[in-house]
Image (cartoon, rainbow, N blue to C red; front, side):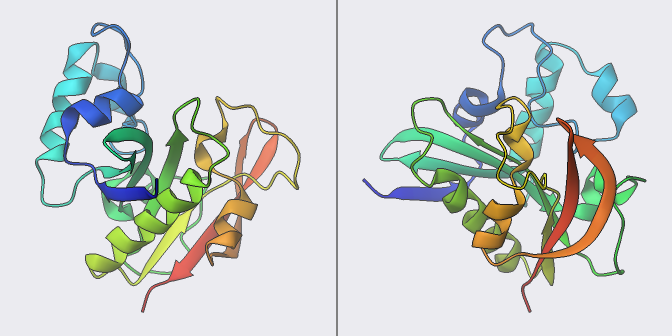
Length: 190
């Protein structure tokens, strides 16, 4: 079956991809880059899921989901940079004043990896940004030079993934993840 990518508007599917196994657990919910760090630290347990429900109801959803038939198999966090912590991040530079979008998390469910779903998610993030008039979209993947990235840290993507979808390196960063430097990758949309 072909992978279909859609805006993340179904809470249960978002929960499947980024929510906890236990409702009281303090997992990311893909909020760590989406909201200010003080608010992120203050939200605990079910409050995190309630905020995600609110974000899903906004005009621009907090991300996109990939489906294999009716089964949700992937997630990508994507939104205008101005609404993310990247707007204030000191380790990831702003290269200009464009109202760019950021894609910061790409996640594929176990058992579905190795089928190109990450590529479909990144292409879907580009489509969502373009459909909302974004002039460009950025990502901040690791530059791992083909070396293995720990799966718990692979959520930012790799430079090779972004290059395969037409992104180009726009700047170095001072951010490091899993021992690898992160780079600012950008794709112009206009």
